[in-house]
Image (tube, rainbow, N blue to C red; front, top):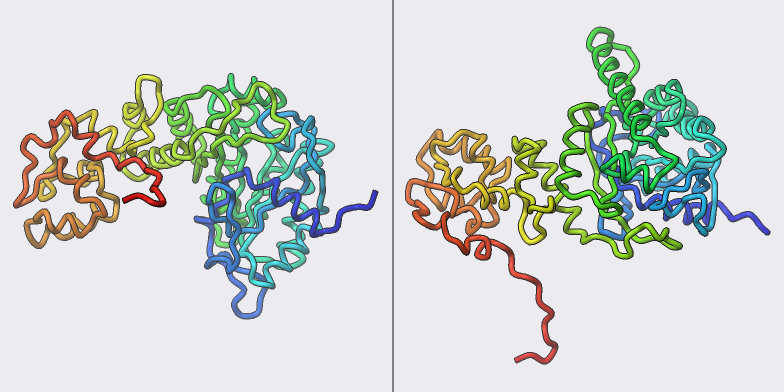
Length: 415
């Protein structure tokens, strides 16, 4: 049987990598090849973009080194027992593809992950070698994100951070029980131990850069992780709590959420249908509430229903406001920033603009309307110089008034 060509293998391994959501390229150090030195840049966007089936935009060459794997995680399409077509790149082939695609203006960087082949250490060595070739032999200065393997030797993981802008280790599932059930080859303590070591190395490297100008960088874009949503019985409240713990303990740059997608030859322990993509979207919104809006994890969890699930018809910020109506209305001319950030319909930029504008004059409802896309959502929760909601915030049907209308199928020959 003939070996697949490079392009055939690229098709297989790019398709196999689409399930990993954690491939954003934000937050790294600025580098470029101005002056004729080196190749590539971390600035700007790639000209050609790929789109995952759920609509995410991917601006990197996103591939697996191989989809062979000695692990048998139930939710993974590349698990040992899966009947999928297998392929493998050498580190040199990955480097050559990256450089070739960059020279054609297809990409701005590389996201490289892999199944576990032979052993965790062997696979980690191969991933590092691909990054080394790019950095040292091609002087590639573009973005590199390496998916590291928690079971690998810590020294190998440390080497990966010297070549990569960002490193990541997927926690995979929100609960230890879910991981033990669906990924018996993986261990939560091992994953968290590796994340802790990477976090410490990032902090130490930043401290060294402050004292020594030429100290080596270590994963300047930080580390991230991904959780699969809907493969186990974890609720949204469980996921929010887990994310908060990861942010606090390991100083993660991002936690990504990926809605479980049914895979070929699926295990009987997996659900037959994927969760709604809106659930993934609500989790991202809750993540932003914790990171940028000053919400504590338990407050985001309070927006969930008794079963721990965030509502799908309204965003978690509005759900929280409807539950805690005693915190409203908020006077936009007097309230502190923290209170304004809790008003549904007001984003971080809008709040900043309101704080700046009210230094010059008393704000009216029309002033707020210029800064939001939905004044109807904001009105019940604010007081302005010419507006007071009176009993509007206490209306029993306020939720139904603010929830977006359900989409309806239009009739082709309707009147």
